[in-house]
Every structure is written in C-alpha cells, then in structure tokens.
Image 1 (cartoon, rainbow, N blue to C red):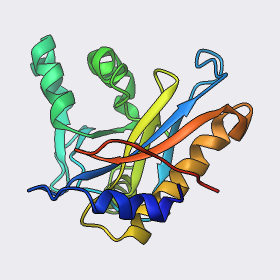
Image 2 (cartoon, helix red, strand yellow):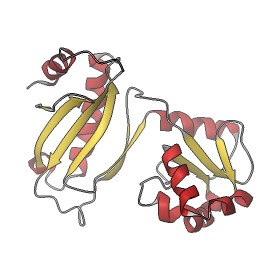
Image 3 (spheres, rainbow, N blue to C red):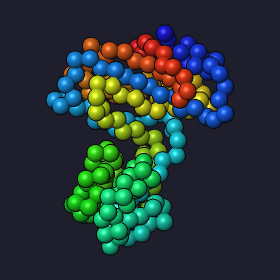
Image 4 (cartoon, rainbow, N blue to C red):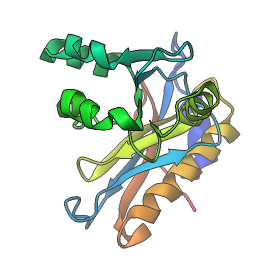
Length: 205
C-alpha cells in the first residue's frame, strides 16, 4: 500500500482517547548484525516529542539537568543507575569527563544505547551556546540501533500532519537502507502502525 493511503487507513480506525504514536517497522533479511551493525543517528525534518536530556558536566547548567562529578557516587547502586536510564532519553557529556562517565555509567547506558556519543552529545566546550545547539539537534534526532533483524521506531504522533509524518518516515527509511550491506535487497518488508492498531505493509520509494 502507498504510504499516504496507509496513513489514511490508520486514521479511519477507531478513535482513541489519547494522541497515538505512529510507528515504522522495518524487517530485514540476509543481514548479519554482528558484522553489519545498524547503529545510526538520523536528523528528522519534524520533531516528534519533547526529549528529556541529562548532562555530565563539571559545573551545573541552568539549561539542562546536570550530574556533576562529585554526584557520580550517588549512582553506585544498580537501582539508581536504572532509574536515570528510564528517566532520560538522551545523555550528553563534557569531553574531559567521558572516561569517568564510561566507568561509572557505561554498564547501564551502553546496553541501553544512551552513552553520550561524538555524533550527538560530547562537548569539547561547555557554554550556553554549545549546550543550546546540541539540545536543539537532539530534539530532532533519532537514534536507531538494531538488536535483531527488525527495527521499530516512533516516527510521529497522530496529531501531526500526514506530510510531516511522511517526511520523517522517508528520512528514516533512507537512513536505514544506506547502512545495509545490500541496501533495499536486505529489506523483507516495511510496515506502519498506530499504538493501538495492527501494522499495514507499505511501499516506500
């Protein structure tokens, strides 16, 4: 089904009492994720939701929730570590603190795919301008990391315009295809769904 038609079909489904998320599901074939990892950051044309960000800085910032070095010891227990991973979508860090961040938080942030990365989140200089810039980029960024031969990501909200959702889907689809060794030949199928709906197979050009 064409993408536009699929979105219209999903919208015709039973009304729900909340703003449903629009999900994109991409299923792979013939991909060995140990050799060909799908681990990318995509800059979306349209923002999906507010993201909660925490920072590992030497000094507190008024622009972002900050965990300073003396506070690292608060997170020595697994429960405290797991709680901050659940609470925040993204983590950023001052470059000079990264070795200590890796030692103290790596065992939880790493498996969750939330370690600050050079692509998006490690700051050489920490000033208001630099923090604002990285926060703006994070708002429209999507991290994708495949752990199995399938990726499911939120691409929009029901309240967004179809055109905005379609622009996000196109950008994500192209980003995923680019990372695959045989490109589109590695795609088994592509589907879209709402939170409470069944998936619909779609063709994306």
